[in-house]
Image (cartoon, rainbow, N blue to C red; front, side, top):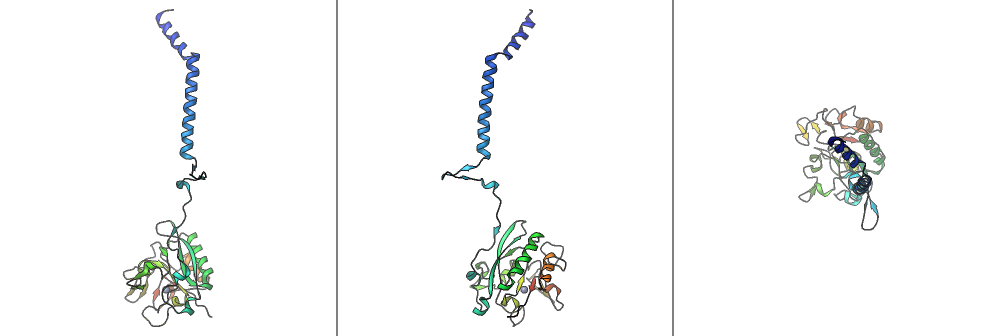
Length: 249
Ligand SMILES: [Zn+2]
């Protein structure tokens, strides 16, 4: 055996050395157990102090963003005669908002129209038609200088609302909103236009923008199918945000 053969033989001998083989094997087995234990701790459920397992918040399905969560009496706080208030109901609705997320809001409407509203919001959600927010007019966020809806806070906030004890725009007769027979949707994308008067001020009706209602929108078609009138179909003025269904007592 020359010197080179001796070195190769010695090297091979080290590789198959029984002690090294078992020591290395146990070391790697031990290492694998530690690593798998770490992996389980990272991805597995956490044990709470009470001893119960809870899922990591990161993998919980995200609930809707709450835009409004008030009681019926809070939603009817703004003045209206008792005879008008007692016919109103509060309906919870879910919708895609402009942030692409599902939101939850509330609408005050005549109790007999609640099922119609549920159907319209189901269609809006199914078609991912964005609705900015749905918050009752009596919400404190629309209270300004001790008065509700001064300068039409709700409309300028692009809020969708139903019941509102008030007169018609520019007139003295009661609006259909005063009876809970009407709803205004996304006022900023769907303004009221009569001659030079545009409400909310500065709003532009542009059918290419998301959240804008037009004659062939699924939401408009659904309202029409349910027997509602759309202000976008009126001739003397256009009230693109407005839908109404007048019920006889
Ligand atoms: Zn209206």
